Length: 110
Image (spheres, helix red, strand yellow):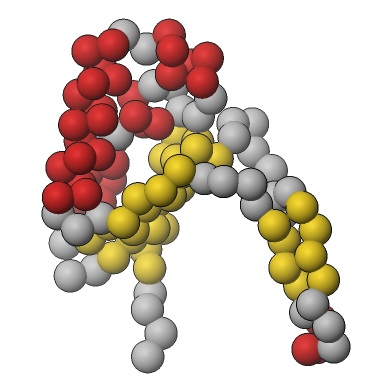
C-alpha cells in the first residue's frame, strides 16, 4: 500500500483554544492511525546537515525551512491513494486545532 509522510504544524495557543471534545476526537484519530501501523512522533529540535562534495560534515542548529507555524510532528501513514491519506489526516490534532497538515507521497527507492 502506498505510504505518505505527513508534517503537522501548529502552536499551543491555537490547540488550547480548540474545544476539548474536538481535541479528544483528534487524539483518537491519532490512536487509530497508530493502530493501523502509522509511525508518529513529536518534532524535536532540528539540526541542518551538509557535506558539500563529501569534503566534511557541517551542522547548524535550527530548521532550514521556515513556516508561520512551528512544526509539531511527523507521521508515516499508509493509504490507498492521496485522497484517502488526506481524509485520514483531516481529523488529527493539527488539522482541527487551527494548524495545518502537509501530506507528501513517499516514493521509496529500490
